[in-house]
Length: 178
Image (cartoon, rainbow, N blue to C red; front, side):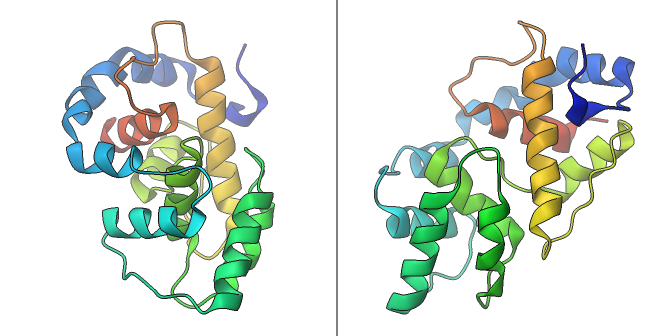
């Protein structure tokens, strides 16, 4: 049964995606820069984790004023996967958009997916409209729901075991799927 978050998906295209996924992400196991960054993360060091994510993604490292740093930490601590609504407040901070927030959340939690324009385009081609709006946290919430739906709907052989978070495998697979 297809999850509600994937209602309208082209089921044959979805099945082809699962068949091709292992091949699409096979070289990702050798992405040492990503792996090193991911496994440097410490659970309770939110600001340090943000810095690691920013370095990995080539974002400018910002020395946040204390009040902004506290806001960021509070928001990130308050979020429970898959609900992203608490993150909306972070969009009021200069130089922060949904992509950057998604990178922070991905590295901090290893559960949230990195927001990707190419992955959104592929999901839309598959029949589930998934907008890419970098100033709209709700569009990221929809993206999170779509990827969670793909995890739930995956056949037992559909998600390769290569040591990367499932959200990362799906994101990379969707970016590379034709």
